[in-house]
Image (cartoon, rainbow, N blue to C red; front, side, top):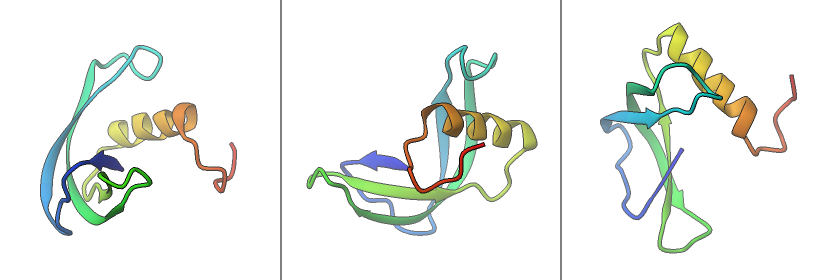
Length: 81
């Protein structure tokens, strides 16, 4: 999910660049393509939550994203490992 002042229409393909820290990966960044799936108003009324799917995700990228979610995720409704 990205929080933005602008909406991104559903189905738009965009390139995402995510800088990483050493606690997450020995890679300095991830660079991947994602497709927007939805947007909705954020709790901050001038912003939008934009959800994405990653249609063709390499295993290495998937593992790094899972690790990021494990360290920094904040959803209380997800099972703990």
